[in-house]
Length: 500
Image (cartoon, rainbow, N blue to C red; front, side, top):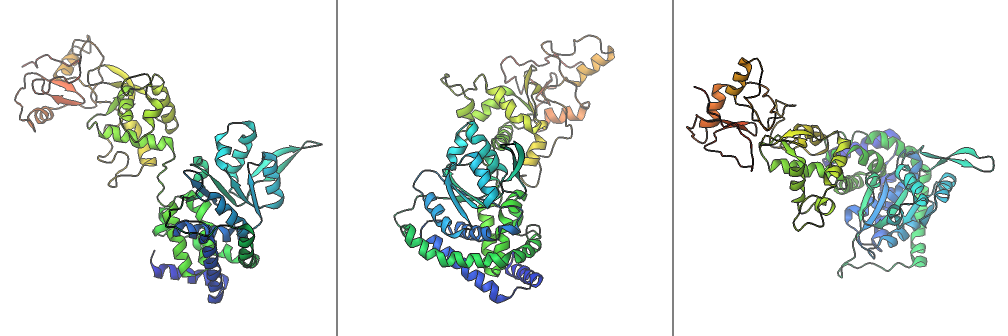
């Protein structure tokens, strides 16, 4: 998005709610001061600092929003500044409630009464435990980012059903990643242990509280009069994510449930802050690739396995699993390999786990024809095309598999086929008898007859082969047995000479 475009957007917003340059300058100065205060105590990137500052400001005008993005503060190990950042937020946000592992009853009752800004530390412990005590709390966190979300509970003594609101601003801090249902609604803040060259002030609660009090008072005054202006800014901001600019790289959930409130706050502070807010949104949440989604990762790796087998229209389950286990930087080797085997090979439960992971995408195992002519359980290439087009980025502008268009013979398996002369001989007998097919398996028919030109091109084109006496149909192509002998032990091919 160009500077002129941003300037036009800011001018339109000001015209819609009657704001002036002085108000924008005052808010920009306040946001700059909040930035400086946060940077005194924690080490974060510039984009993360902008996101934290805008998130703090949005808690004071939360009444203008129907959704709020979680501030997901995570780190790979302890002592990376997560708790310190929560301490800083506690001094600046509206109605702070800093807690660790509250009970479900306390959680929804406190939010229903107060609508605080929840600052939840050690959230990884909540999602790591599998117990009744944490199950309800996880459900509240999964859905508590949208206004109107309630938890129905029976309240004693008359056990009447009461709907408890669970919508409020939330900052969640923990070690490692959180479930995808949380990260999908979050603004990610990746904390790292500070290097020796990075200097920040030690956090002293009393001294920091005195320094933060004027900033909190200014934020409160902004919140008292800013809701109507924010609502007008939200209307103007609707087109920012749809005009082909950088914000178009944000998916719908990242924009509507995480960044839209923050960008609305930034737009009130003038052109410079709007630019910084857009840059932070794109840097932290743009072009998210579902790296935490196991199913999407599996689809990507399966596409890579098929790319290693050009010309194959299907793979047996054991072939697909073997290809997945060869990808060293994927989790499949740890999850699906046989720990008792000397080499890497699938475990007995791997086919079932593979099928269960692919099931939600509408991809099922079916009978496929091997190059040997045998029938095995496996997966057809065409069954993946729709899922690839929907969940994986297109390559070179083409959907599904990147290097080629979908097959015009979708639905047919061409792993093995009869020579045309053999099919014609069977047809002359009215389809009686099976002498025209290899004896070990019943082979599928071709979707269309192969003409003389097809066979000539296949046999004589690139290789210059002149052995026209013997033919075989393997892997969906006509090949000369003399030039391309069977490559799979026990492969069944039709070795009869073609009649004159």
